Image (cartoon, rainbow, N blue to C red):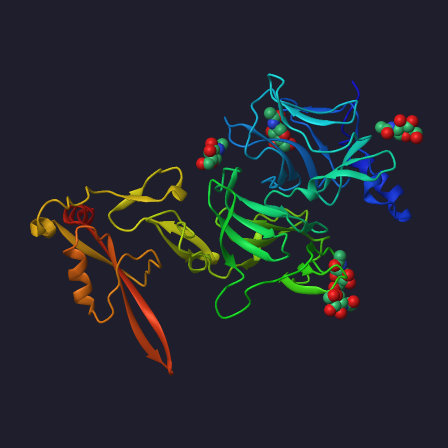
Length: 433
Ligand SMILES: *[C@@H]1O[C@H](CO)[C@@H](O)[C@H](O)[C@H]1NC(C)=O
Ligand SMILES: *[C@@H]1O[C@H](CO)[C@@H](O)[C@H](O)[C@H]1NC(C)=O
Ligand SMILES: *[C@@H]1O[C@H](CO)[C@@H](O)[C@H](O)[C@H]1NC(C)=O
Ligand SMILES: *[C@@H]1O[C@H](CO)[C@@H](O)[C@H](O)[C@H]1NC(C)=O
Ligand SMILES: *[C@@H]1O[C@H](CO)[C@@H](O)[C@H](O)[C@H]1NC(C)=O
């Protein structure tokens, strides 16, 4: 009946009081002795002394699998800050054990090892108040810590070392590794990259911006500084090379939870959540800083589908969040997964037929929409009308983009407009609705 978790807040605050004055390193906290275990059924977890973080199983969907995760335990959403098996959810009946020989092992109901950190045998484990779960040796030195293998989130005091990265979730509800990464590469350059998904190889970088500014930010590590609550790229001697998020809001760790997460949409966001115990109904994570400023226009390159899936377009909606949509006449390929892009909702024109049936097609305008790169043809001195005609009479043309150069205060910029080529019938049908 050995209780493996000291869930009583009374006990915990007592131990805090005892420990705090003597600046004992946080690692000396030992709440998980050898021989402890968690199961998906027990609905228990290993809590940090403050009770703010919990290490345990999280069921992802009502009938879905379980994630072994560190969560913000005192907020209703129980937001995941780290997870061990994001690509490999385990079914009910799985077990996490800190064995008597000092190994942490996640096994599924058949006894198969699903995950185990690469560490020397530990003498105990601890869920710390920083949100870091550690395996420690007898002398309290850290053998392994969740902070050194981040998933998609950084917490205050955490650092991102050279060669480490955050990988975004696949979608809002799917915790698998997705299409974007935030990485401090071994060449010391800091980037946001789209990957060659499902390969995790970095593809185009979309931050820092390549045009009109800094191409590289180079440093030794990224620290989430707990006192300034800034996310800084620093040199070994502590010099801040570049403040990724320079927090000047004056919101303390005492009053707010803080996290930096690379979200599934490719945006790196700094979030705050008020801790106040009052029944404040609109307590939510608010994104107070983010990079890049416009994900829709940032993710371009001669390969990949941009910020959204193929054939879909991206626009910033409330709070600068990207929204992916299908152009008129197109529908989601997979209605449960918008990242799979859009497909035409009409039969393509048969190019073996003569020009004759181009009458069956027409262009639907989308003002202020550009489809950058990947063009198969470009004409320089065409009017909008000539552009339209050339697309309508070309059975391979899916859309035409018309760019008009405007001059304003001696600066020129291009106003884009695109026209989607599609079956007339589709349009008339949707107009009737
Ligand atoms: C598991 O724990 C959570 C959080 O404490 C609680 O909301 C939930 O109802 C529990 N589920 C079961 C099956 O006991
Ligand atoms: C911890 O230290 C004690 C005393 O030095 C030693 O007997 C014991 O084997 C150590 N345990 C581990 C797991 O290293
Ligand atoms: C999450 O998405 C990946 C990639 O599409 C897929 O292989 C996996 O089955 C999904 N996981 C869940 C739980 O839906
Ligand atoms: C955090 O910021 C403070 C104040 O700017 C600075 O004195 C301290 O050295 C920083 N800590 C780290 C780990 O960079
Ligand atoms: C830190 O290191 C950089 C590069 O080596 C050097 O330029 C800078 O002067 C150093 N700063 C301090 C405070 O030592």
